[in-house]
Image (tube, rainbow, N blue to C red; front, side, top):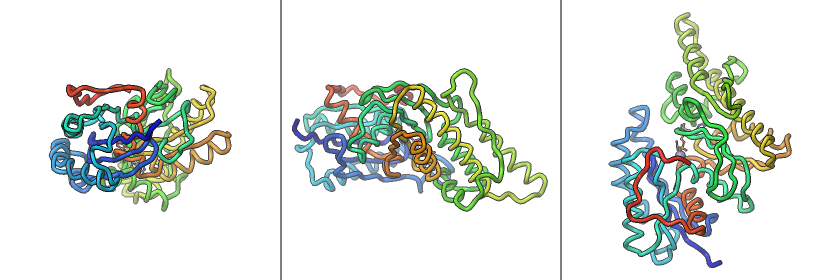
Length: 336
Ligand code: KG4
Ligand code: ZN
């Protein structure tokens, strides 16, 4: 088959991103304008500000992605865009831009699920990786344990009952006075702390052995910090960060490896912003090696939001004939 070039666009949260990807695996450009600095002062993403900034940046980011790939629209076979889940105003900017380009250039439009993008980030640097495999998607909005049956064909076997893993990182970071987003801050500070200094509970969730719950752990950390303050005892923030992180890592590793065994698969992949966490990557690397399971993980830049991952997922949708019309809309709660 001839080479296929996908122009991909991602704007579901606070990154305005565009990329050009060849054959779903080869990234020719990957431009990310991060709005983190803008939202930091508010301690989280402000949806209205995110949408406005996406509008300001989107054309520039798309232009840069084409330039860096040394491509013009005539070289592009299809436009892929995240149409959900995410912030509706933010999604709409990317979806509108993608529709305009597809119409003007007379090329197909392919809508992509954001989580499918995160999972497909694994195809970029692991050219030999093919389904089926088990994937843990841990991001700011989702914590899913997924059986990847085929490209873009998923079975969700576990999910969070309350907070997503990234959300827990962000909330605990805030409680100990670290900035937004909290994941990278905790990752950094935990390196200076003792992960066995404080025991935080590893939540068990009743009926479904693959489900997660992080709100109890978050409350335990908040109670610990408040207790210390009331007793006038100093809080060692590095120990709190390291002990909290260990509790999250333990639960994610245990549930994931259990699924790999129960479903009889021999490949496991990480995805989503939390997959950038150094302790999580190391724990999975070691456990998978011990258990004889092949371990895959994208580089950190492909773990957090980016458009190259949308280009990877979009390619596999495109070659199986998925096409969207100009009535494609943003779907904030799109299901996988
Ligand atoms: O996938 P992502 O960029 O956006 C969503 O789709 O939600 O994930 C963002 C989340 C945030 O909660 C952030 O704190 C977390 O990923 N994160 C991390 C790290 N880098 C980003 N969590 C733990 N350790 C990290 N190094
Ligand atoms: Zn994401």
